[in-house]
Image (cartoon, rainbow, N blue to C red; front, side, top):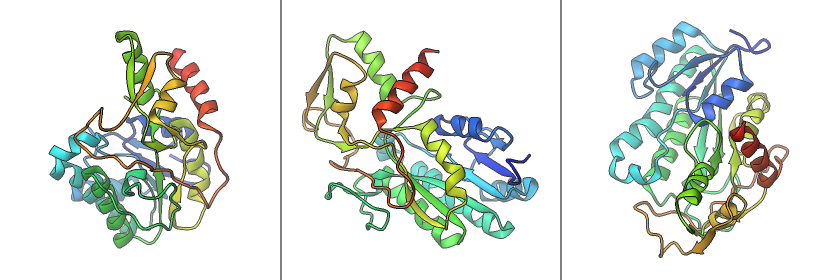
Amino acid sequence: MVVGTIKTLIIGASGMLGSDLCKLFPDAFKLTHKELDITNRESVIDWIRKIKPDVVINSAAYTCVDECEDMQELAFQVNGYGPGHIAEACSIFGVKLIHFSTDYVFDGSKKEYVESDVPNPINVYGYSKLFGENKIIENIDDYRIIRISGLFGVHGKNFVGTMLRLSRELDTVKVINDQFGKPTYTMDLASRVKEVIKLDPGIYHITNEGICSWYGFASDIIDNAIPCTSEEFPRKAKRPSYSVLVNTKIEPMRHWKEALKDYLKERKA
């Protein structure tokens, strides 16, 4: 199957981001977790040998940040070794690889991070995703790693959906106001992948524009959010105070407030 003249394979096709990638690449080959377990090296190689794509877009990941603290082996298998297997297979068959990483590879000691900043994760999820980045770089030259932040989309659990649910269930919803990032709509992100495919190998930061705290984000979603500190709302995995990704390599995307409006319309529809 061909997108233009480029045969594309999407791995992790049923996830929140993968589902929107499938909309943007309607003729791509699509593999879900049920069809391909990326932690199985032989299976990864067999599928890529069989399909013979020009480009692999990997959106498969274990993204439950708090669960990763207890499920460290699984986190490193899915987020680390799995991408390494894909990179190895792509290298063997001369395939370009697009892979998604995270703002959580950084520790939050800076207000903003560009692509060349040195990562220093502070939780297992971040360590596992950085390990995946490194396994890709070790195994293939023709890669594009896209670091992303605060994803929301209609095809999976996300912060916006959680806020809407809690707002119905509770009189007030406590939301952390001392962690800052850039919320990103999966459809906007997916729409940029075709552009990144054509760019030079390397690491890219792609998010919607606009910096906010989780409370600031929530306040645009619901009307009964109240601020609290990270200390008042402890979670198993430590989060960076600032995980703001700065894109220095491609044109910026629209503000997250505009993206949120479209997401809410799509969700309602």
